[in-house]
Structure formats: C-alpha cells, structure tokens
Length: 360
Image (cartoon, one colour):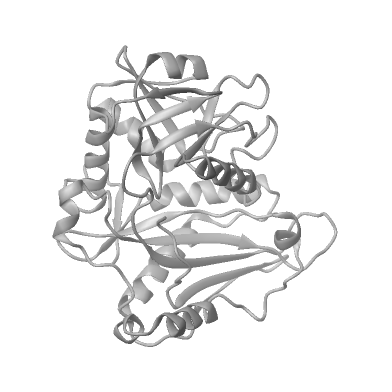
C-alpha cells in the first residue's frame, strides 16, 4: 500500500472564527535532519513520526471524531525529471475542497488560500530536506512504482458532542512520501454487496464518512483474495459506480471507453477528468453514462481504476455473484494513458495543458 503515517514536519493550519474569518499559521513539528531521520532505528523513527501526529490544542470530542463530519483532499507533488517538484492540478483540488466544505454546511475554504497553503507546505518541507527525488529507474515500468509527495488537506471541527454542523472548523495540510498504490501482480476485483452512497447523500463530496463503507468492503474483498472491490448503485443494484476509493473505466470491445456519469453518488475525480481528456486526445470515443454490471462483464475488453494514488491502475478481472470475467491485463489503452499521465506528472513528457504547478 502506498501510504504510511510518516508526516513531514511542516504542517499548515487555519482556523475559522465567525465574524473574523481565517487565521493561518505554519507549524514545525519535532524533527531531525532528513539524513538523521533516515538513519534512525525502527522504534525511534516510529516514535518521532508519532510525535508529529498530535495537536494538544485541538479538541478530541468534536463533530469529526464523533460523527465523521469532515472532508479532505488528496493530491501529489511529483519530482521532476529536470529537478524540483511540481503539483498536479492543485486548482481542481482547491475547487473540490471548497465544494465539499460548502456541501457539509461549513464555511468554505477559499481556493486561493488552499493553493497557497499547499504549495508553501511542500516548499517548506523540501527546504528542510523532506522531499522525494527523481529516479531514472522509475521510467522502466512507466512510473508504476515511482515515489512522490502525497499532500492531505483536511477539515477538523470545533468541540461538540451533539449532532450538529461545524461553524468554526480548522483546515490542516500535512504531507508524506508515498509509493505504488497496488502491490505487484494481478489486481482482481469483486463486486461488493455493500452500498457506498445513496441518492441525496454525500457521495459527491469527499467526505470522511464515505470511506467507512469503502474500508469495510475493501477488507472483505482482500480476505477473499481480491485486490479491489466495486460498488453498484443503491437503488437498482445493477449499475456500476466506483471502486473502494477510485473511479472506474471500462474499455469496451466496440471501442467505446465508458466511465459512470457523475451525479450525487459519485465523486468527481481529478484523475478521472484528466484521463477522459487524454483518451479523447487520442481519438477514443469516451462516454460518461450508466453501465450495468451485465454490460461490463459481457462487453469489456479492459478495465482500469483511477485516482490520485492509483493513476490509471489496470484491473485483471471482475467477479460478480460467482461469475468471474478476465480482462486484457495490462490493457493497451490503459497502459498508454498511464504512460502519458505519469510522463506529464514527472516532467518526462511535455505539459501542453498546463496541469503541473511548479514550486517557486
């Protein structure tokens, strides 16, 4: 798995106060030099990392810890082939974070503050030596196992114990090094009977609470020997919606690339948006529409999931109610889209769309 709780020392924090707005600060949590930390034993490294994950002045009992009222973002700063770091499409994350907070009835965080906070957090950590350096060997598998800096902005509410909304939240930005999302080998998926999101709910928001069901379903899938799970819709239980924490694509035998249409049950993924653009640039007919599990099993040539961590990760098979259908693995289209996406992200290919925001 890509993630580990090894947060870099510089953290951004902003607190909203009614009538006053946002008050911002950068915190420098306990640390040694990057070289000294790399030389620490396992126990000492774990203790130092844990010390960065505590904030004595933030309430334990609140609407986030008690009810999952909160939202977050995930984006990456990627080491560039010619040196430095660049963040992938941070403006899209800024807009989605604003919409998520607004959807949860929180005072929304201004996109320009989001952008400044993200870029400066990465810059300050890099200045202390906490970053990821480009490696030529990553090019061998088209960056499937490449490293990057994962950036996690999230909300945290004021103290409270009754069911309520947040009027004076915090926004916090942390970052950590990450690597490959899926383990080596095949990535079989299974359709789960659990329901991720319901109409008129929060499926379109990157809400904390959405990921409880996803975590349970993913664990059940892994215990059955699968790498990923796939959700169906809550009403008819026949149309595909998402993976455990990613959007999903089906390249049909007809040459049509299908991904479920956005609505109030599906997260508007930024990698999803990018892959749609890249596929259309290649002349592929891309359709955002409902796709039934029956159509997916009968007509799919290749399948891949998309997300900040996954990129465009191929799915080798999909199983539903005991019926297992294999796909081309890795499929040619998904592989080419992954090569193009990762090439742009790591600065190995031109960036004609202006997706990469370089650190000053």
